[in-house]
Length: 503
Image (cartoon, rainbow, N blue to C red; front, side, top):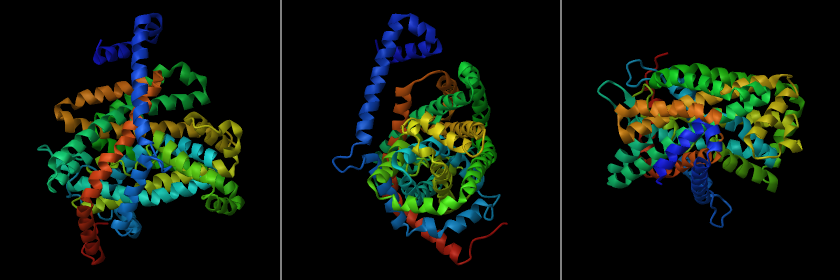
């Protein structure tokens, strides 16, 4: 029997778990598919996390090398343009007549909604639990360099975006891979990278950007009340309905929703974290000292690199997705005629996601002592979330309920943004007429993620998200001279006072 037939049986069986258990032949096919997915996941993991004797996993080396290269090649523009980025996000340079569909702020909110999620809550707790306070040092350092990766990919996204006859703006890494490399005489190579990237994005959107989010949200809500797990199908339908209502409206609707949801969920989480930190304010200086002093010890290095750069990558796609190129989908739709300006806006993403949100989580877990409790020394995401919840509850009784709400909002915003990413990849491969097919599949998988435990499928999808880094960084480095020229020209005009300010 072919793979397609077995896959169809899998869908039927998942829709009726009782049938799958009662009928032996269906169970046989499920076992076959489970083994197949497991073998593929193991093969991809072996490649992505191979260290070739260096002790540094390949995927981590690619992401770090790319961010270091961009940072120095662009002469630390990520630091020099930081204040200007804030001005642009505030709307001071928003020209209503510029081409595009969403504002700079909405583009950043859409991108952040995809990155801020369970990795910021559970992934950080895991890293600190394994490696201790020194893990935070490596998180912050990685984010500083990762800002340049976002700057590069999102500048390219605007440079090579397209406009349909109806005025619809679309773009993403596939377009700068194909068209940008074609200008360098590498058209076939660029097209190959683009197709690979598109398939990886679609797979990642269904798994890590969808099923994993709904699945883990139900698990976390179940720690608050068993009702949620008892009626997981009802919660799944509710989440699927919410996601469907938003994604049908396209990027404009997504931008409108995320521009409201992201500030609220970030503000709620940061406010609760600050209350705990202020409660222990006298201990903060000593804790910061420990973060720095323990950054280079064996256990801290393990926690920083393995907990954040490996475990964090595995479940949160490196938390801020710097180097993966995913944010380029959202920023390509921004209203601007200056590609460099949008790249400068995008680079704030890792700063907010990691340097602010992740650091807050780390400090809360450390300053309350929750990271030392033996029951939380595990690489499981639910355990990581429980550690964070215990840290919050130790100072603010009942704060775990607030955390559960935050997790729900984080997961919801991640799903709607990743639906847009996958939709653009689907459109690139199959055309715009079949987008409704993708949307229906996506909404269906939101529900499926809430009622099933497809570990291998989710792990496979996460591997696909990580795999996006390879074609994106290869293309980005090859096209970096174009980015540098556009970036430096923009900066020279800004410094000379030629830029028009609207607010």
